[in-house]
Amino acid sequence: MSVGVLLVTHDDIGASLLFSLEQMFGNTLPMSVKNLPIRQDCNPLTFCYHAEEVCASLDRGDGVLVLTDLFGATPCNIACSLIQTYRVRIVAGVNLPMLVKIMNYPTTDLDTLANKALSGGCQGVVDVNKHLNPI
Image (cartoon, rainbow, N blue to C red; front, side, top):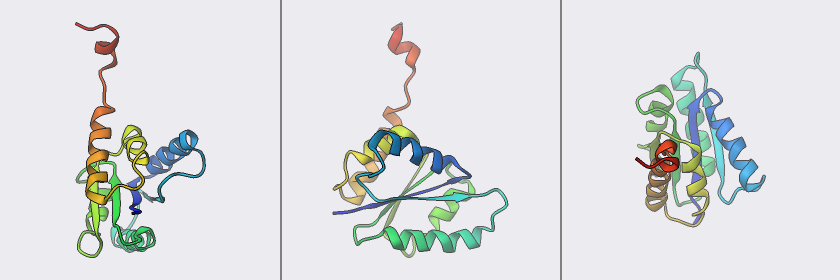
């Protein structure tokens, strides 16, 4: 089983996350991950086409987990354009803990991987002060 991962984010957010992930896991990630940065002055229709190309290159029959930064923003809307044509799960609010979590489950099916992304993203948001100084 091999689910692809597509980051669709504003500007360099996805590239920065991917760079950090490669620093942790090395240059060979356990899953195929591609980044599609959406620039401020972009034509969304052009990027919908690019998103389709990248999604098609990642899908090896098991689907693609699409991670985007902000629900309702242009990158998320572009990601949503993939739903009609491809087997995708889209999760908004991408963060580094989410990516680390899914990299630890490279052979997981698409739906389970989307749930792992959600749990990793939520569990990665921590009030550090409460952990250091419990009230």
